[in-house]
Length: 193
Length: 141
Image 1 (spheres, rainbow over the protein chains, first blue to last red):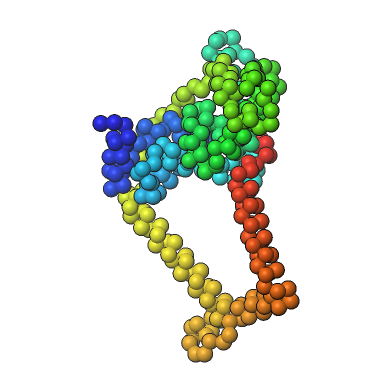
Image 2: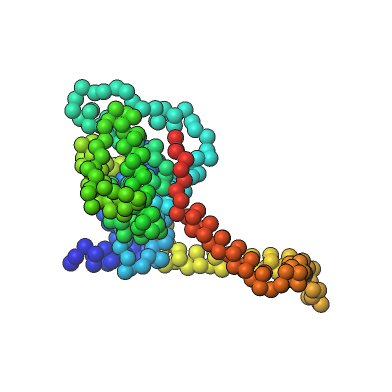
């Protein structure tokens, strides 16, 4: 049985209230949803809360799911909307000292290779976090969730040309921010066509 | 040489270069999931089936619509006549809305008014589309 047919059976069982079937769906997509939430929201705690909320919303609205669509795209569209809403709400809330401490960039470099890798990833995370949320979303969906332009369009409700424009600008912004951190970002060779 | 916005539409070279760049940062890296995330999330699921939850939602929407209609009718016809029946006076809201509109039609003529309405609707649609497709440029903290 192929993956999609298996998934449809799980969805049908979940629609009848089978929590084990939905739990299997959570298991299959926890990585994608948690990854999206973490890269959008920037903290593990927020990402964990968001992941739980996204799956809860998916369960509540499962009857609305169109079985001809891909479940992953539908689930990520719920996740994208939730993260963007949450970021907008956060913009109007007060920052606590803990929040401030989270965004202060670390300047310590560890002696081991693993620590350097972590620091490099942290640099990318900070550059990503500095992007406006609409740009961050398409970047995360494209490069971390590995969606095609068409899938990003289905997830976000944007047109493909808007997505390409946002990706182009977001890449430039990230390149600029990474170079501010002392990391040179290579520009691709201009094509002659 | 790339000119105009062609480089945005044909973005495969940029796309590939950015992926290569991310790879030098060891990205994309799969994240470690919080322990028991699946179990804890499953425990929070409602006991009702999604079908029942959808029915509840439909009922909620219907109740809201009925309440809105009641409030609108109350404002329009007056709560007194709704509750006690009797002759319904000419709705005040309709009078207030229609009178100035008819006055404008009389003064400017119907074609001009139609053009104005079309222009207003068109601007609204374009503004709405622009608001939906334009990202928020503010940089979050």
